[in-house]
Image (cartoon, rainbow, N blue to C red; front, top):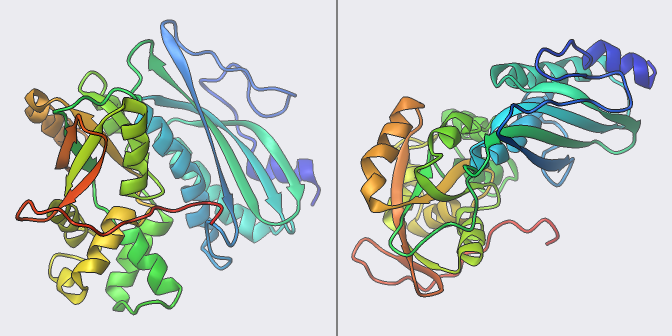
Length: 324
């Protein structure tokens, strides 16, 4: 099967919103009047971001989900995406399953595949996604202010527990592993919540490399510090994929590490003024997305971790580094 046969068979579909899709040298997009175009790219590399034996359908889902999560963090509505795919061989069964997972998520969010490239080589997936957001309403990393509440959506740390189990670093009962692995391999991009937070959140980022590291980007861009109530963060993992009673199976340090520095969560971390608490909760309910307050933005630079008694913790947690 040649390159263009592969594209036609698995990835070329009519477009409804884009002005021009797959088949020409360029795609053409037409954002609505008064909209800014939001653009983001992510790359997934075998052995670095996913295991060689991952389910191709799950991989297709995740490849697009991590990009949609960036749009969510900006408060943007998905429009379209391009796919650059390097393949060790043109395996029809693998491609059918990969494209099924990819395009199912794309359809769920009205995000059209409009172009890209394919070549032979080590398995590598690079997606560029396009969205639109009303001018002046994009959620940025630079808007946090002292006194803001610090919020996070969904659960944290479940993906890290799955990763450690799959690496053989810990043992999880089969039902716990299945649920945690779903969070690792099929993350849920919080697109609807991101749009609902426009006008409420002052800053936002998606949690891809770990809560502590990604929060650091907001603190640096906004010129502020923060305090995280670590017990609240642990409770997010305790109510996640491993269930409340399962949290007792792990020591306190493991729960802290997974929740604060686990990565691959693809939840939204955002700040909002305290007077908007009810509205933030309402946005979560309207989009069927749990949201929880885990801390406060402070004027003094740096990140402070405190326990349930308000005492400072002195452990250091580092997030994922793509070159380490």
